[in-house]
Amino acid sequence: MPHKLDKKIISYKVLTEDDKKVAETQAEYVAKAIDRESMHENLSRPEILYGSTYKIKTPQSEHALYITINDMILNADTEHEERRPYEVFINSKNMEHFQWVLALTRVISAVFRKGGDACFLVEELKAVFDPKGGYFKKGGVFMPSLVAEIGCAIESHMKRIGMLKDRDLGDHHKKFLDAKRKEFEAMHTDSAEIDEDGAFPAKALLCGKCQTKAVVLMDGCMTCLNCGESKCG
Image 1 (cartoon, one colour):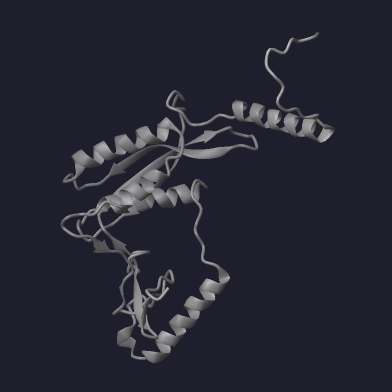
Image 2 (tube, rainbow, N blue to C red):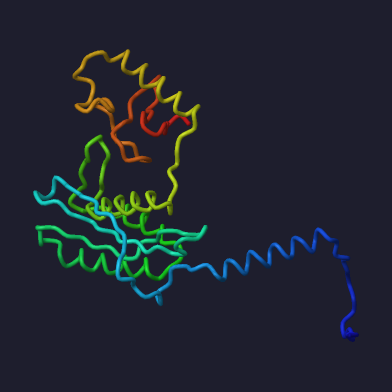
């Protein structure tokens, strides 16, 4: 059927067989993407959700917090099957923080159900600082607040279900840190210089990058034995 051209032709291209195959592949991909189920607020809650519970014990309270994150299985029994967090609950015998903890769980659950990339929640929560001061976890990791530790628990869960990936150090970086640690231990043979769990020196300073007490003076430069951050570049 002929078509009348109302506009001036400024360029043209003859489609080859390869171009047609690429167009067909893209069309198939778009069709599959449309058929794939994604998280959105109109999804109805199934009768059974699969979840995990994380225990948080801080020196600020004698009672632990238990964070339960329930996941929804999307595209079950297909090659696109994935787990996405649907709701979160926080329980504790300590009722001191009940009001804001309840509000926090409802907001986080609403963001989960909204869909899209919810990974930004981790950084937002971990950036909350307690005006009364934070605390150190086992291993010398500094927690600026209880909210930040809740963010760390959510981060661990997202890594477990594949939403976040671990940023592993390269082999060269690992060898460099191992060499630096052995060098430091050789210089400080006194057992009092080493932390109780043997991870990092007891007199190490807090690293501003990884929030771990692992910064020591090496070759006239402050270097973190955990992540490799150095003031000398």
